[in-house]
Length: 181
Image (cartoon, rainbow, N blue to C red; front, side, top):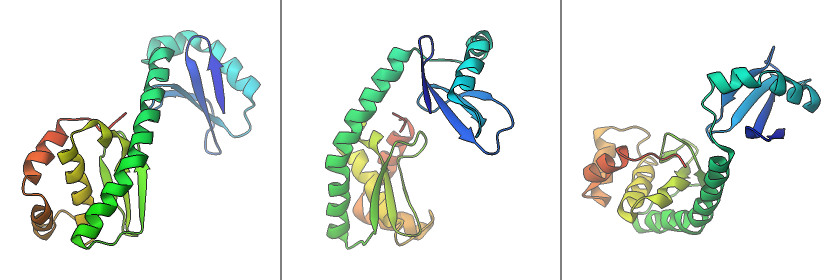
């Protein structure tokens, strides 16, 4: 459920069977978020929001709703570019080096550029569209190497090095950047 508020912008309301009361926090998108018990109506959520306005303003670092909209727009653009580019680049390198994966998933995680699950799903962050192509390729090659080594062992890094001689430089550069959108 979402509440459009004139002061806080779009407020995300998450219903949880485990919630015993109402809790406010900031979501990864920078929006105000309310966790409420499952039975809470939209009316009660709005009422609670209005009665706690001063406390929310004082305790939580709320972003300007215009920043939220700008971020949403940027995320939409990056997502579109990522859908057009990343799965094809992943497929290109997989075929080039003989890897087989089951699925490519696009994410917008705040902490990781990519991941590879044991069921051979490779997840790539749409934030990769903000970095230079050699860094994108490094992440793709890194995740493909995880198909053979689900760890960061010596063998894993040797395999990454087979496909990207500058992987150490690429890794250092990526560590200085933030994958979040």
